[in-house]
Length: 143
Image 1: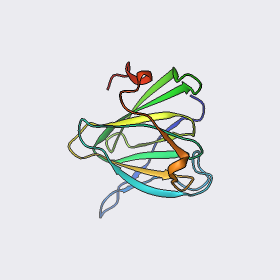
Image 2: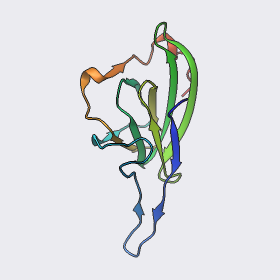
Image 3: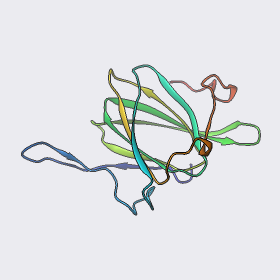
Image 4: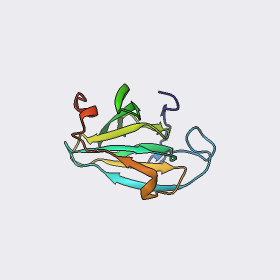
């Protein structure tokens, strides 16, 4: 999928505790800073489906483990074109950049799961599209 970027991130061990690198302004996915927020995903629960019109999301799992499924769709008839799947966790510390126009959902894999999103735009309700988990386009997705 065009614009999707997955990057292993650096962890610096220090005497008083590790430092987990996130993202710097100007890196892929963050040409400008919009906002940051934490999203909690309960174990065995799915949050989705979302598609941002202009916002790029940079997702980092800071606690637990989250499965993320990306879907490229034909917006005219909601036909599924392509899917990609990622696991984000502290054990496999990495960042997933999701550009505008990609549908995504996430499922919590552990008891406590926290995702940090560093975005390039401020959240606006009319900027994001949502579909129900039971929408026919996503019925073949296996969580």
